[in-house]
Image (cartoon, rainbow, N blue to C red; front, side):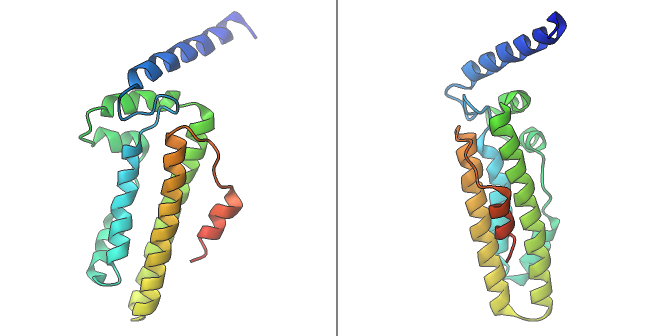
Length: 170
């Protein structure tokens, strides 16, 4: 390793320590440098999915929902620590950031699949199937949110891809 390669690593480590210190007592976890507020974005669509069987017109709201990248969410957020959340995100250690980002991608994928399935069963007039799809989607998304929350709080043990894929079998 050359001296020029070592300097960026030192700078990143120093920056990480600084951000951890600033995160203490904030909405940003001082270990993972991630914030649970991001999960509110996913919770919004979960609530909509749950309503669809009783209010099929809410499917349009589900279809209008768009996934937001982590920093994009915080740019539009009203939380006090949003600037810290945006600044800290690139410095989140890979053992937290990579599984977190993977879970977010999977949640977004599950949401898209669930909306399409709900649209199909509602078009067929199958209310029982709509309830089943909405309930499974909600439960599976809540399970993934629990995993994401654990990562945010410093736990980097997550379910593997095979288990995530099994959740997609609505």
